[in-house]
Length: 222
Image 1 (cartoon, rainbow, N blue to C red):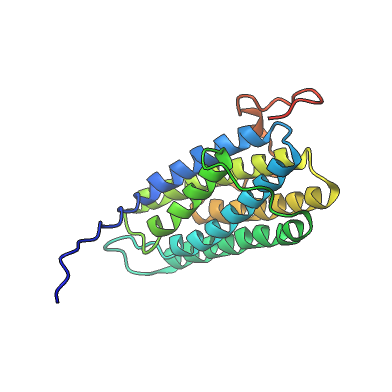
Image 2: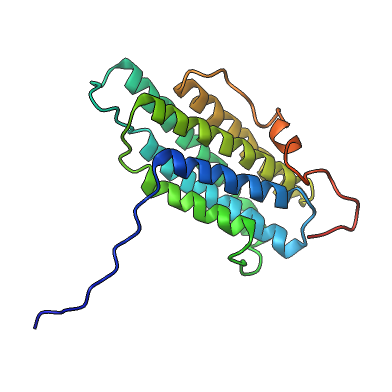
């Protein structure tokens, strides 16, 4: 018997640059939320959300490295782009590994609220994966995607530093190690598009520019 049931089609992935921009917005929202002291369970959950995000971005970056510019034969420039973006993927996964021991020791925190900025960040990172699978477009579109990715990574670093400000020692060390890995990822991404390297671990411009990122007084929790 032939089934007459129809199944809804899966939503189309966002364009690559749009997915990167959405990621940057979500990372900025999370960084603002994480700049304030959090109750212990929520802090643990935020670290877990950052951990998940870093893994998904490492996977997504491997797809981004395969970007195809129509009508352009593979040459030295294309291979160098792929090499640099693949290297950044390794650094994202290295940052993810930095938080493995933290989560094993500190725990995952309570169940997340889907409206939390950290949960929205996880969704944005997950959405990047299909958007960057077999990407294709002009070199300008490719570079705009990478630059938005760089901006998002700087905001992730700001968020990690915010969490580190109120973290137990083991978590503090893991978060700072993750930020160091993200600095290396940014250096490779900048090199992929021919930009001067910037170190988000040392340049706190992103965190200073976040509204509400000033450190509240003791005893203020969100």
